[in-house]
Amino acid sequence: MKLLFLNGPNLNMLGIREPDIYGRRTYGDLENYIRSFCGELGIECEIFQSNHEGALVDAIQSAYGRMDGIVMNPAAYTHTSVALLDALKTVGLPAVEVHISDVSKREDFRQVSYVRLACCKTFAGYGFEGYRMAAEFLFVERKRNQKEL
Ligand code: DQA
Image (tube, rainbow, N blue to C red):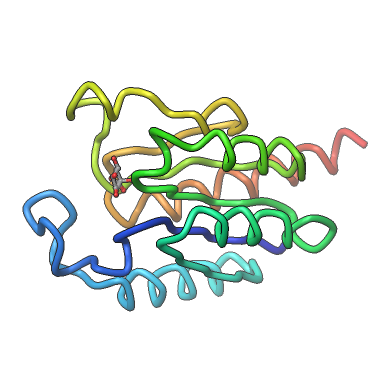
């Protein structure tokens, strides 16, 4: 199984940005964590971060025909981006939305998620662990679909 892990704007500043909300671990720590649980689960992973909406659209499109699913933390673009929603719908891959913080308990403007409309599941408020939960969810779903075929 091949999964694309996508991270949106300002997540490259993890460890520095609002540590009371996002913790003290860095973006490099997150990449290492993703690589390590993917290794354990036998998942091949690609990890990409960008501060630019179009670059994230390109990354989603590039997953078409190559990857089996997408784990995505679109960060602030969650709450604004129809382009990311359309890109997920375009490729039609199973996608899971992840947020480090519990967005449901934060400001009103964070209660809207466009990408959620194209995601089969959301994990929010579990810190880095949410990325693992998302990968495991996609892994189990794939096994289930393979059995049904
Ligand atoms: C975030 C939550 C978003 O509202 C915010 O804009 C982020 C990070 C999270 O991981 O908790 O940048 O996606």
